[in-house]
Image (cartoon, rainbow, N blue to C red):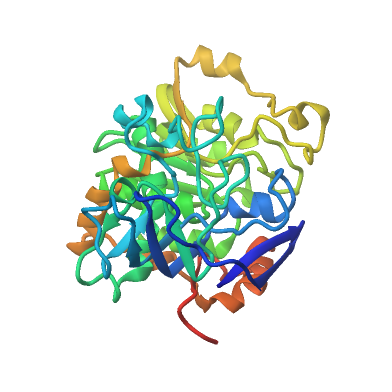
Length: 382
């Protein structure tokens, strides 16, 4: 089969690889029809992780079931399904508590949590390929409605970024009628903004410096804040009459840069603490890592950050962190899409065949204007 393979920093190609296949009775084999390039893929693409050469990218996956193992009895051939990026067994202690983002069986002993095509998240090949093996298929696969083929660009967001944005808002503790500031206007930040609007926020502010992202935020009623035009903290304070936002979301991660191009993994975290009111809450879904050999200084290389804990403590704030448990949210969000209450595909800038992936990675990584979200369709030809 064809798949997008990693060969080193900023070196990827579409290669012939061994076909994905049923390996255990609980497996489901999916023919991938839509798979997204995610901002977190760029950490690996840029060589900022220990992602091994020869591995296949892709953790935001949707497609048609073409084969099921003998022990699968819920999912059937022909079903259109979304595969959560969290690979999870469904019956370990964490999964039974709804913490499918920290499955105890899907990774090597001592590590909780797994994902398709992701560094340090188990051996699972990614779905930027023609086929994907989904383990524990009855538990993992979310069946999609009859309109799934026509609305793939919406439903494919269920595998990661829509539930992840929702999770950021959930962890912030936001209630209807409150204000929220979101640092990062990439796909996840925009999904957090969509989630906040959907959940009844009175005021949604999105901080970024890329005009195309800020325009998209404005389209759903969020207030765009360009941090290249002045302190985002000052702008938030002005918009909230000096009080600060009730809640905040961190949707950038450890490769955060200030407007001058200086990398600082604590930059957005510290600005959030300053932007959010006393006793407010923060949800952090941007990726942070225990070790970052490519970091700009010794501290960041150790996965540590100069976090302003004193101000955080003084303000009595709370923070939730970690990857989203996709299965906690994806059924409800599927229903919102099916009922045309939300349309997450508004962020999609490009629908491309799999062969277009190497160029798309290059342009998305460069943050070229207009490249906001790329959906790859391995079943299509150029």
